[in-house]
Image 1 (cartoon, rainbow, N blue to C red):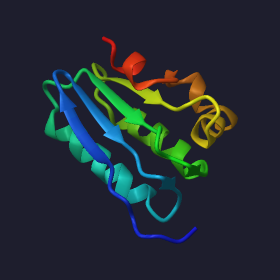
Image 2: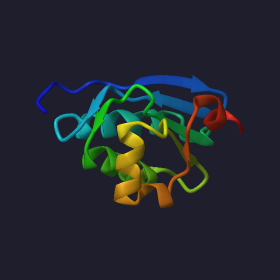
Image 3: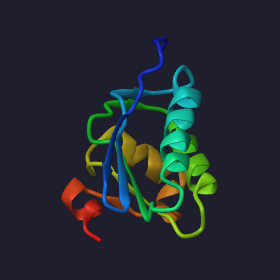
Length: 117
């Protein structure tokens, strides 16, 4: 798919940053999304405890989305926990399962569950 990079929406909460990812994630926007996530993490370096990537609105994702999650996981400081929200019947959930990312990152079915500290 060819499209322009879509930025993610960032919402800062006490000790937590929530990033709502775009409708499509592929080779065309993975690098820009990673840069946006890394910037959000780096901006809150000392106070961030949980980073939530919200794939609820993502309707298309290939292996680049799984790579994004893996790269973000490796970028995080040791004290920051990564959580992913992906509805069980959606494409992101299936991609994360097939690529094995689900073994390393907790995937929640709903936002409220992922935000519970």
